[in-house]
Structure formats: structure tokens, C-alpha cells
Image (cartoon, rainbow, N blue to C red; front, side, top):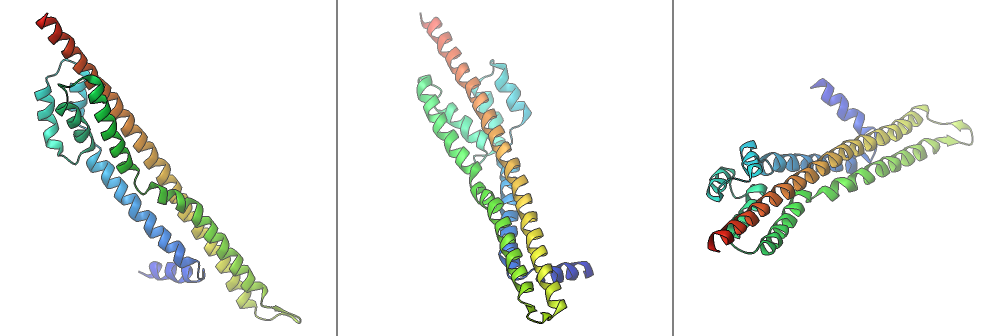
Amino acid sequence: MKDLHEIIATLKLGGAMVYPLAALAVLAAVIILEKAFVIQRRARLPGAVIGLVETFGFGWDELSRKLQPLGPRNYFAAFFGVILENRNRPAWWVESRAADEASVIEKSLGRWLWVLETIVTAAPLLGLLGTITGMIRSFKLFGNQGLVDPSGVTGGVAEALIATALGLLVALVALFAFNYLSARQAAIMDEMERLGTRLIDHMRLDAVANAERTS
């Protein structure tokens, strides 16, 4: 508790810029937690399903049964569901519908990431603004007869340094989070595209087999 009070007291020395920087920090934390929850809960695909799709010899009903426990809000279940529902249509039709669903999923995964990217740029600028205001406050204490208030100069320098440090800290956390979440989004979409191609190929094999049986 004592350490918390000391941290709060130190941040207060950072001047007015501490408040918008704190707001950006809270906003970044909310977005990071929300995206982590979404990736953990809605973008996971069991290894059993991946192994089944990779075999090419699976039954569509078997795949449907394995997808049911994932729930309709799972991104992979929604994507595979589009292919399952349209598997009796021509392959070009299914590819078009699957591409539309993948586009919706990609937008959902990338929602609010632009805010993190903005924080990466805005936080250091706010910190720099705090630096400037702190130094201006220090310089004002120099009069014609020299230094008027040494403690005031120290406070101005502290304001400048704290604002700069806080701005850089918020920007670094947002930068690392943005890069990680963007990489995870790209990996999820690549995996979805790869497995979707497997399902389309399986549809084509079924169509060829059906044509041979009827000929």
C-alpha cells in the first residue's frame, strides 16, 4: 500500500500530461485484455479437428460433430460451417462464400487494433509535451536576479522527466501488444485459409468420385 501511494505521489509530479497518458494506458489495457480473451476463447481450434481435416478422408458428418462443441461464436466453427452448408454447390460458389466469411472474421479480429497503433504514436508526443511544459515552468523561475526558487526548478524538471518516461512506457507496452496481436491475427487467418483450401479440395474429390459413379 505504501508503494502504491509513493507511485501515485510520483505520478502527480508529472503535471497535467499525466492524466491523458493515464487514460491512454487504461484504454490500451482494456483493448489488450479484450483481444487476448477473443483469441483465447473464439480463435482456438482443437488439434483433433486439424488432424481430421488434414487426412482428406474424413466424412462431413464427422467434421460437423467435432465442430459442435466449439459453439457458433468460434471463428473456425463459423468459417467451416459456411463450407459445410454449401458443400453441395459448385466449388467456386463455396470459395466465394468462405472468402466473405473470412473477411468478416478478419475485421472482427482486427477491431480496435488501430487504437493501439494510435496510442503508440500519441503517448510519446504527449510525454514530449509534458517535457516542454515542465521545462517552461523551470525557466520561468529564473529572474533578472538569478534563480528565484530552486525547489520550483526541481519540480519542473521532475514534471518533464516523469511525463517523458510515462509516455514512453505506455507507447512501448502498446507497441509490443500491437505487434503480437497483429502477428496472431495473421497466423489465425493463414491457418483458416490453409484448412479452408483442404475442405474445398475434399469437395472437389467428392465431386469427381460422384461423377465417376454416375458415369
